[in-house]
Structures are given as structure tokens and as C-alpha cells.
Length: 392
Image (cartoon, rainbow, N blue to C red; front, side):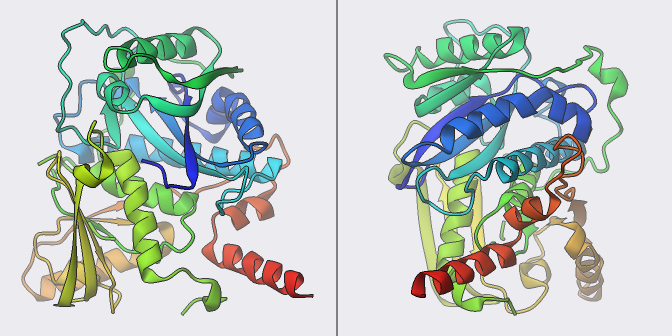
């Protein structure tokens, strides 16, 4: 569900290589992402680009606890967000504003095996939630795009043909201009069971929490939010330099909810019918709060303005999982120490990878430019500099 100012586009990628290293992901996807970004940055409009990545390794595993899928899935997401940010930095593509040619990318994982077939009476499930989605549900609920980028090659064209065929079962014709982009080189093994590492946790979590400022939502934020959504078991929350350019809490709340809805909510209903929003005017334990319920599922996105480093982790005993980045790793133990003092069970702690440009630019990593794309402080600094220059 894109913002009102950005038109939606779609990039359908073929399945990932078996070994998801920086080098292998770059070889597999850099040509396709480069061609897509090169096309979108020239448009006279801003784009919300949904990047859909099939994951054969998670096919038929969604009934198990989502935590068992976490390590592989978040590592893949981190690698792809890193690659996308690196390509945008190299090409000078705008990823932080809503100006013409800017690109707001979101990554969705697809429960899909290339050998699957879908009979005409395949049932659409209105209660499924992302960020892992099956192809029939995705095709039934997302069929209107400004541009559709399909990757050349057998696997890429097979996926597009399946998606197009399924979409046309519910709409008269697939909406969106289709562009074929070049594919990369990828080695895929079929004996995936033999190479799966054991999961770090097999618990199921219905209340997952993440903390952050989420100012000027960038790739690092998107990874953190997607990893948090990834853990949800279908049955939440989430002093600065250049503070005058920092978005308000309400604007940041809107950005977070808009992003999460785009990877979680799959329904044919209009947005105003698909969600319910509840604002708490009375004080809550951590400050003001806004809850957004997805009507077609059991998911509620709870955004809370926290007043201390712990937030709801020490006021809501039902929270069972916490997602952290490398920068906030130590906070996880502090949370569990506080919960222990209250006689509560510790939360399971899940960490996301650090987005890294190293090795994605063929020896020219453009590290400084890459880092600026995933730093709220740098985004605010550039806005301050732009404001100063315009006043001269």
C-alpha cells in the first residue's frame, strides 16, 4: 500500500543462490537491481518499489514457529538491502525523499518453489500475513503497478508467468508496464534440507518488540522492522544531531506503520477497511501510543513513544521476543536483567545483520556514500546543508 505521493512498482527476482554471501548475492542480483534503479531514477515521479524474492528453502515450513526461519531469512534480507543500498549509492539514486526519481524499496519474501502448480480452484487465504507470503495470495491482492520488472532467464520468466497467470484469475488484466531486465549468475542446489543449519530458537512469538527512533526510514530501519515482523506467529512496537530536521513522532509512526502494512497486509479490501487505528489519549505506561490492527489477521502494530531505554519490554509481560541491531545488542541483556528482577521470563533476543557495502561494488565499495544512505544523522545533515545553500 504505497503512500499517496509514490507510485507502486514491482521487481520479481528469481530464487537466491544456495550460498547467500555478499559475493554470490551481488553476482545473482546486481545486474537486475542496477537496471531497475537506473530506470526508476529517471522518472518524473517517486516510486515505492516492492522487491519480491522467492525462498524455496522456506517452502512448506510456515506452519512451524517463525523463529526457526529467522536466521536464514534475516541474513538474506540484510544481504539484499545492503546490495540495493550500495547500487543506489553508486548510481546516485535518491532513496530518502519523495522527489521525482526517488525510490522507496521494500523487500518481501515469497513462499514459492519453482515446481509448484496452482489449480484453478486454489483457495485464496484472506487471513495470511507477511513478510513471507505465498504466490497465489500475493497475486490475488497486489495486481496494480506502475512498472513491473521481470528478470530475464528461465527462473525469472517462470516466476513472472506464474504470477501473471494467478493475478488474471481475479482481475481482468495485469496492470503495469512490463520491462525485462538482465539477470545475473546464480548457483542453486536442490538438496536444501542437507545444508540447513539448526535454528537459534524454535519458540513461537505472538508479541514481538523492537525499539528505535526510525527517523527518515532507511534500509537499516526496514531490515529491523521486517525482521521483527518475520518473528510474528500468525495468531509490536517499535539526543540527535540536526534535531530541527528530525521528523515528528507522529510522522515517524506513520512511516513505520505504512512500511509494515506494505509487507504484512494482503487483502483485497481498501486500506481504510483493512485496518483499525486506536489512539490513546490517556497516559500509557511509556507515553502516548497508537495501535493499528490489521482486520484480516490477528496482528496489531503498537507504536509507543518510550521515555526510557526499556519501554514496554518491562511493562508488558506478554512480550516474548526482542529484535536488536549490533548497536543495541547490550540492551537485550539489560532488558532481561530488569525482567528477572520482576520475576518475569526473559525475552528471546534476535539480532539483525549489519548492512555492509563491502564487496558489492567490484572493488569500489563507495563505502562513505553507502553509509550515508543508512544513517538518519547523515540524512538530516544533508537536509541542513541543502537548506543553508538555498538561503544563500
